[in-house]
Amino acid sequence: MGNRSVIAGLIGFSAIAVVGLFGLIYGNLITISSHNPLIQSLPLVNALLNSAATVCLCLGLAAILKKRVNCHRFWMLGAFVMSSLFLVSYCVYHAVHGDTPFLGQGWIRPVYFFILISHIIVSIAALPCILVTVYLSLTEQIVLHKRLARWTWPLWFYVSVTGVLVYVMLRFFG
Image 1 (tube, one colour):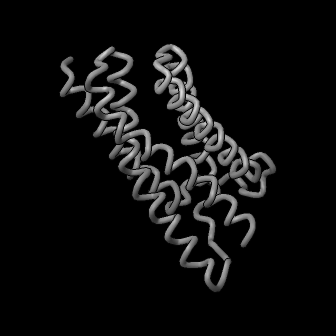
Image 2: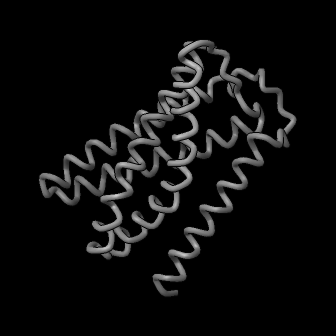
């Protein structure tokens, strides 16, 4: 299978994942009690996974800036694993719980919604970029990997950091 086919498949998968995620969040398709302690702990787990991904991203960037390629690969694959686990946990939580309303009032409300909406938009763009960047790395297409990674890293970092901010704001103002 050629590069173009694989990349098109990854972009197609990303589109299906985004549509499926919106269905999970707003469809309430699963009937497990959202009061289950395990389900209730998932937002904290998600924030911790996003935090771990952020740390891995920073360590991966530091490693590649020092030309430590193997170390860079280790940390970036760690970020990929943390983000993948986050996505699974996030889907499980929202399939059961649905959307979480923001109860904050006053000046914090537009700040929260700006962060949330930008987080959603950037995450939609980041998902296919992350998948293609990882694919290019694993297939040792380093020139293309570097070119795309310059765009992917800041998107991924923004999504990881704002994901934690959204969690903190929901907990603090909820």
